[in-house]
Length: 147
Picture (cartoon, helix red, strand yellow):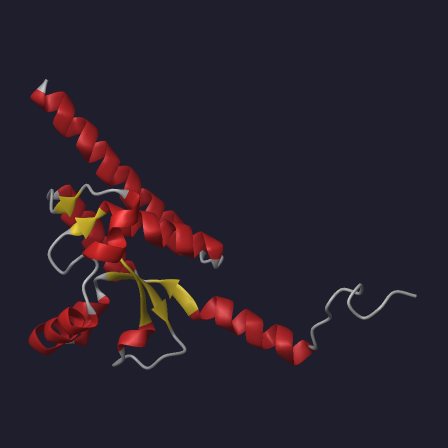
């Protein structure tokens, strides 16, 4: 008989429930997705590269200033995900940011698409992929109009 290391890990029922609740706790923010689509359609976007989000995303201080000026509900709309395990009035509740409080960033959509897929938040992954498509489609339309 094999060692304990060779046997598959078996989760207790309560452990499965906790893991299931964690995965289910993050859901798509329809208001965030609507705002993002509206901003892209208005051309309020940045066509940056995949890895630019680490530099382009607002700092914690910028987030706090935005919340102070506009409130947590306005802050929430700049995110594709809502983590229902966190209280509504906390920054931790809002996941998968897509912009800098002024414009949608292509790199943020790409980052959200990748991370959401990694954590199996498929509705958020699809929404981020749609934003990515919209941004890239907008780029092609602009080029075609310029030609």
